[in-house]
Length: 455
Image 1 (tube, rainbow, N blue to C red):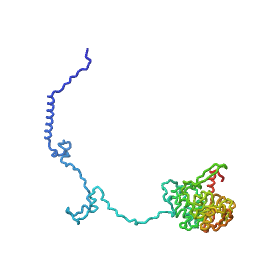
Image 2 (tube, rainbow, N blue to C red):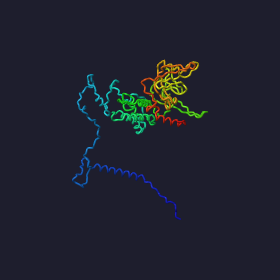
Image 3 (cartoon, one colour):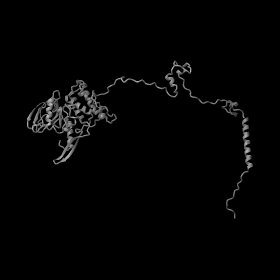
Image 4 (spheres, rainbow, N blue to C red):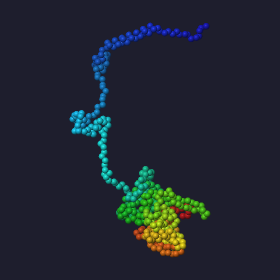
């Protein structure tokens, strides 16, 4: 049978003599190549193929004879100063040798500008400060308004319209209707009290607090251009200006007051207290009006306490030792008070065993000191009183404690004669000047509705 296995291939290894022969043959080939190279002519002597002999075979390098390019070196530009001759100096120069100039010193820094000369110190007295404030009465809050705060142009224009009315009032009499403009201006001020979109940037953009074109142009004689505004408009404009300038932008009548409704044996009862977190509360311990404006109005007595008008939540007399009585509230309560507007006969509180109460003592002290008291009238006064406000409490100016009489020795009941100081605006109890305004009454009615109280 035929063998199906793989056929064996016989491998042969060349002998040593064959290696030696191949090596000798390679050496000879290299020797012949070197000899042939030596027989070729020098490249420098070979001329390029002439251009007028097309087709003729080239006998050498066509670029022979050209000088190879050398590497370029950076050369500094020569300035006009460097072209000028500089006198040669010896290596050992004395004190009379010229010193190097700043330009020469800068030449030591070939890749940088020359050093700047040192600045000389200037005195602090140079120049003068420039006043950029647009309102004479300002505050830290108003001077640091966030100008990146968002706002709408419509809100700015709404507030800015008061400036337009002021400008129209300043026009010559023959070109405007003063009574109509004053009526519109009065109504606008009453409405602005309850703008709920007021922000710092809106006040700044509208310039409503600026001296020459804002609210100060109404109440400040320096900027009113001789316009005789009605006295109630002047008071309302200044009150709104002071509130906004102090940062009180919240139009809520009960701002800063926490309201709690409690269930009692007699039914639901609403209680109010000042919020400890409210930052704009004012002190009531000052003599005189302070920032209060004649006719300023509050829905509750605690709100008058918040704004620095009267320092008691329920009591009718507020005073401090050494200062006497500072404010009183005319209200009901069965006292033998007599209200004649500019003249008031006001009773103190009942004492015991012939000793007067603290409130009575404060009023007597004010009479001795000759200091005025702030008088607030309450809507709780009898309906027959013509000076009674329709709602809440109203500030009616400063009164002097002229004298007193003792009505009852046993209870030390004193009745004091109060006279309204001259030079103040009239009491705002009637006419278009009356407070509270229609806007204030409407807003307070809404609040009472939310509390479940009758209007």
